[in-house]
Amino acid sequence: MKKLAILLGLALFLASCSTSNHAAINGTWTAVLSDTNGIQVFNFTTDLTAVSNNGLSVSNLHFNSQSACFPGTSTATGAFVVSGTFNGMTSGGFQLTINSSSGGNQLQMNGTLNNNTVSGTWTLTGATSGCTGSGTFVMNKS
Image 1 (cartoon, rainbow, N blue to C red):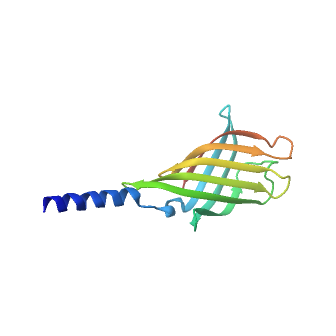
Image 2: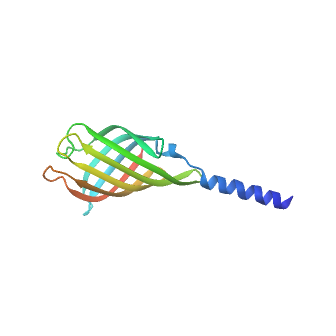
């Protein structure tokens, strides 16, 4: 009986460690991007929703700062892969690509979700003058 209780407890523990919670990414997020000197260069808000095959649906993308790199409407795609959920805290890999509607500019963000914060690095490439760079970012869920 004692062995059965230990096995049951171990099974419950392992199940709680491996639970995938892709829905943890769902919601409104605010991002702040800083250059390699720590100076804020972009910030935006967007709604993210987990979809099948680790994809992300990105909607209501709005740059809060004026930028020649992302004038008007931009499109975005992304991915989120859960690495684990423990004690209600979800973690995983995050990727987001934002393309400007004009100018051929692309912002690539790669990071890690820990609970309600994504942090990582970004790279901007583009044809518009001044639309290249890299640095770090932090995104917080509202």
